[in-house]
Length: 70
Image 1: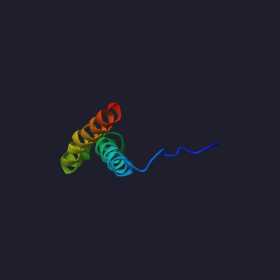
Image 2 (image 1 turned 90 degrees about the vertical axis):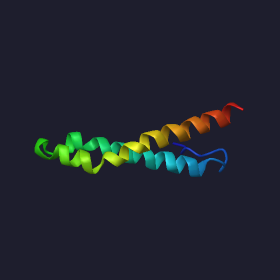
Image 3 (image 1 turned 90 degrees about the horizontal axis):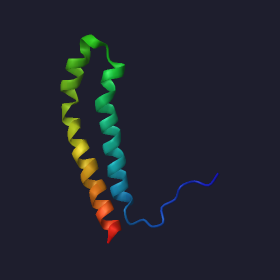
Image 4 (image 1 turned 180 degrees about the horizontal axis):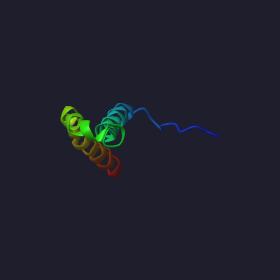
């Protein structure tokens, strides 16, 4: 099975930031499934700042899409 490869190194840094943003988003939402109900509110408050990574993810994705449409 052939692995995925980028056709150029042009957007690899943005892809890395987009990947890290998606990991932060998954981590932020994971406390709903992996933390006991008694501690969910505290866990949600500790990870509330990670919600900004949603904005970063969509900002980078929009930039990449706009760049590719040119």
